[in-house]
Length: 76
Figure (cartoon, rainbow, N blue to C red):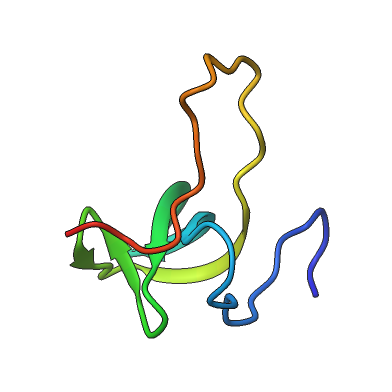
């Protein structure tokens, strides 16, 4: 387990498949949202080419209109 809720473990198949991830490619490191499909990370339905260094659950939004819901599987 890493700090502040970040982990490099494989995500479980329960809950929202979208995660906040730390990515690395070509010497750049950034944070994004990706979906875990049970075997790999997806970026808009395409297998992510950057390395996922760590992930954590997406925090709740600061404001909710009641339409935000969990997603159990990525949509393609």
